[in-house]
Length: 224
Image 1: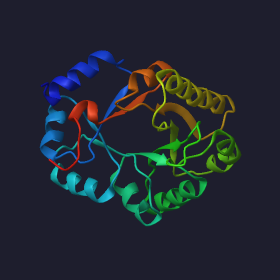
Image 2 (image 1 turned 90 degrees about the horizontal axis):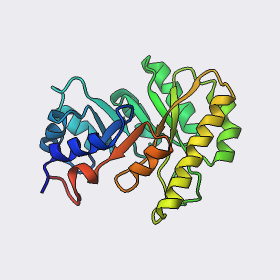
Image 3 (image 1 turned 180 degrees about the vertical axis):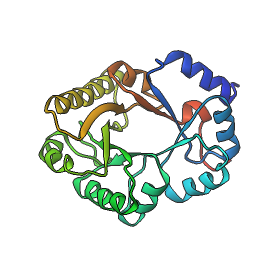
Image 4 (image 1 turned 60 degrees about the horizontal axis):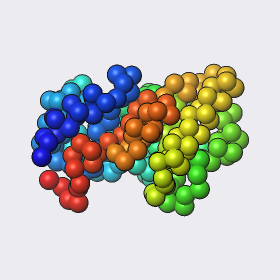
């Protein structure tokens, strides 16, 4: 069985240097995270705030880590997310974006954020449809305390490789079209898309950040 460091080395040989590898560490213990850190990983992604804060405390000696929040953000937890994460991948509505902007102004912070979109219907996922995102872009462009870096997506379960690739291309195309519209604060330089089962397709479609958990740490049912 390959070690965590061997898995990371194998992944890094496969992906372009321009693509950021985010190790998704839900239900992963801090000893395994330290092994990933020693293998060169500097970006960790969490989707549960309390679990993440506990790990951040245990790993506070790793000063050069960037923390990414990838889970749905409850209104009462938004402030803690802003305070403790460099990147927020899951800004999934105008109301949430406006709330984060207000809180970021109070905290004098400018978090790097992705706008979460779903180009295929999926009742189990949050995010804008392409049509609704276009309607909200003018308001999003007014949010001075958000560094809006691009789009994020999580695909529905059960797609074929061809369907997944087409969906990723749709997200990339949407990003390109928004960039052409020349909004002043929407840089659209990043695409957060692709997980353990489909990250190679996401990279082919233009992903700049991929979110890998199982591929690095194996199957996880409980904390280790």
